[in-house]
Image 1 (tube, rainbow, N blue to C red):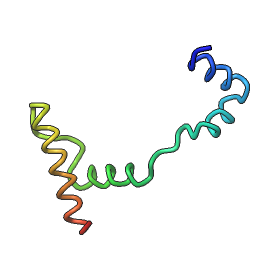
Image 2 (image 1 turned 180 degrees about the horizontal axis):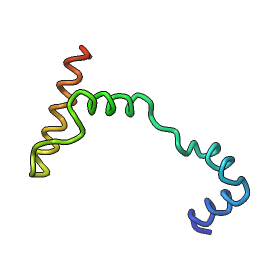
Image 3 (image 1 turned 180 degrees about the vertical axis):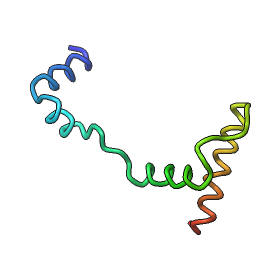
Image 4 (image 1 turned 60 degrees about the horizontal axis):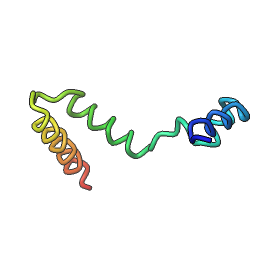
Length: 72
């Protein structure tokens, strides 16, 4: 039996709520989500760069600056 078939059977047996609780589905990483949210509040949701490489660099720089502001 494939992994997908096993998961489907488990879902059918437990129902959505039971399956979600069993798998931890919907649980976000609070620290990660909080850091990303704070970074977006301070610096905005977008970057100015057009090239993908520069976008990554700009995002890294934003999170570096966020860490400096927090004193981490």
